[in-house]
Length: 218
Image (cartoon, rainbow, N blue to C red; front, side, top):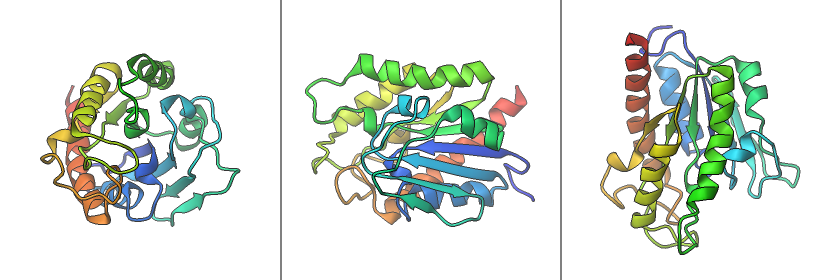
């Protein structure tokens, strides 16, 4: 297969932005495949990064997708997050892509929970270090202000900036650089419409390809 990512196996893990058809599990997964990569995507809704090391019940379901296959969802009370070590062993990826941000922003809290975010992130990145696994972590978009999750532009920026200092050894992609605040529509302040996810996926795909190609040249 030809393409900028030909011959690479990519494992994507993410939050609720990957759980629904028409979200990133559709658009980003397909974009990366069109660039030649073999892609497996796993999502767990409503949990922080640490839940990908020690699996736990998730409040709003999971979704998985492998290659050209259909999205498989579980929105029952049996839904649990996935263990990153098992996923790496199963798929043997060249790169892991992490899309976990909004679930850790504490949007309803007066102060962003920085210590908890650090604990969550480092619990996961320690597994990448232990397996010497290259990784790329991308942060939240601006979304739109208001809605049931109480997301604000100021907190989205604060979260993105903080994640950029915490996710090493993963490379970081700042999604707030892709568009002006509020430019991509949402239906609840946090989750985008299909058009918004398509825009986000195109921008992410460009940056992921550039990040991987830059690492190859080193």
